[in-house]
Image 1 (cartoon, one colour):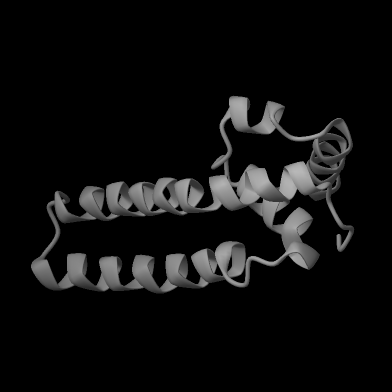
Image 2: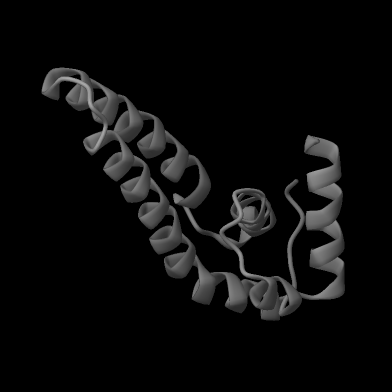
Length: 109
């Protein structure tokens, strides 16, 4: 998925990018908090948290690193697939981009 997107969608992505990163990080911190409060040993909780951080670090890099226009549609698709794009933000995209994102979801499912 390496199509270019309209300028308005690129501007929206640049605005939404830090918000989506924040949403992702909040989700990861909530996941870690759940581990902290489990009744397991401190060592087991530490190992579980370490594994979460490693996995999510790879995921955040895959989704958010290298935000350039040539991969904007792919990035938007990943952000949308992860549920990190609000309905309002999604509706702010052009019809063409929304259709491409919906098609990518159907192809992934």
